[in-house]
Image (tube, rainbow, N blue to C red; front, side):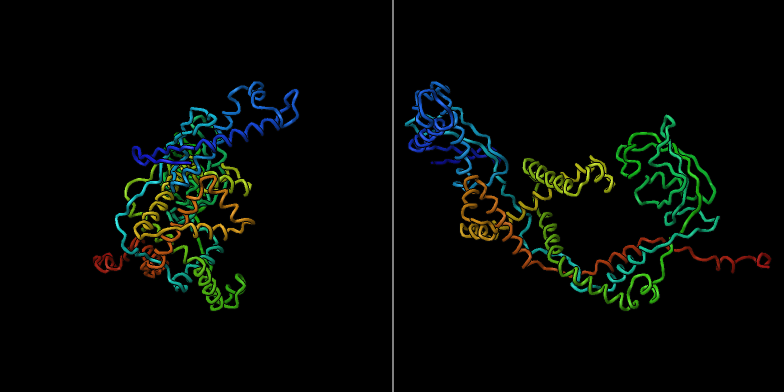
Length: 468
């Protein structure tokens, strides 16, 4: 078999394949024998019918058409491997003629190749990673999260007005424009937290300032892009609300004492609690840090990616991710609607997120391939053979040949090339340890509004007669 590659526009190439006459004749002879064994021809024992009889019974072109299909389907993957091509999609095959005895057969196919992108920089990647040991801020966060689990909600005084940091036990009656009850929202008693994503921000604004026993009626036009869990299905519709504040509640977390640590959490003391949390966090970090470091490196590398990810590759990545997603969903025994509800997203948001994830995946792969080319990394035939030997297959050599016949060895080659790139990046990255928990706490503290000053000064400046 001979192959010739011609570049076309963009990343497309045309590959012409010529199969020699001897191979064609061998395939034709085998096909006639297979047909003779497969079918019964009157007057002949099975497998003994001559070519003219088979042609007369099945049609003169039946065998040749079968040979042509098998030849083309078997030859184009071998041509891809012979030319060490890296396809970005399935080929478009042009094979209109049938094979003929004693003549070589030629056909061609066009295929898009994976583009060889360039990065804006090949300098050493600099990243921030968590400390390997558990930090005080991380330990405090973990202890706070444990206490949060045992939070209680106490009634505030009747004069307390609803604020963003409070909770409200409320009675809600929600109806549509025709007056039909919206049972998913309506409730005689619902403990509600503003900003939790259950109802919209517009709803939260309406109930601010309400006090115990107060009732308020209002109407909201639900926007088309509404993401609130209980209102996403009402996008573009009108909803009438009647809300009664049963009581404003305040969240009260338990104090972390030796008694609480022992009786509630099962630790010997607060000190024992801290020690076990420290050990657990350190162990988790040891397992997670390599992945965290790799993710940070890839995020930096993708930022150096020039241009957009090729649409054809994004589409294929999207199809692959979608197939994997539904396989996992089926194993978990969940429906797609149940998954959307658990995540608080719409199907449109899911599609948008999937497309963005697919584009990022393609960019990551192409960026790693660019890094490998820049560094001059190569994958040898021995590397590929070693990979199959590590696969655990009963016959690694047979499996490798199967992949070669299918024209899929380029997937192994690219995978190994990207692995060499990420190993190089991981080894040489400049990593700065950062206490992200402490950083987040500082940012949260900075966002808190300043407390109002007392009126002591005003009182001091008041006229003497007023003070009296």
